[in-house]
Amino acid sequence: MVKLSAELIEQAAQYTNPVRDRELDLRGYKIPVLENLGATLDQFDTVDFSDNEIRKLDGFPLLKRLKTLLMNNNRICTLTDLNIH
Image (cartoon, rainbow, N blue to C red; front, side, top):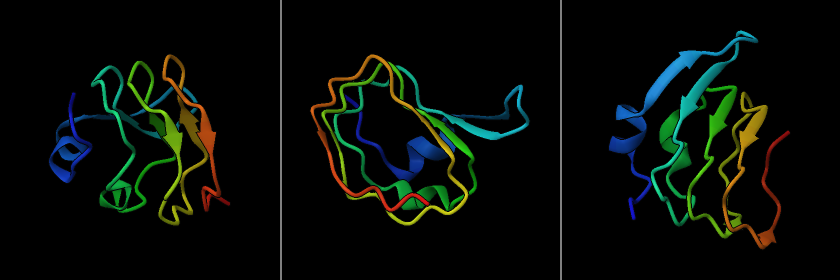
């Protein structure tokens, strides 16, 4: 399993998706815990966490630009306040 780190965020694919949103592709890394999202510096409209091992969605930093989280094929069983507006 890979830890979500600033280095992983920097190395992951980043592109403009078909709806012209700035997207970070963290698909398939088997990430177990969402942490260090502040390292994205709020540069993305969409973050794709599909095909990971995430169980909880909590502890998000305030990310004003973020509009979409893609979370399919995870193991989510807990949601708390995400600070996403």
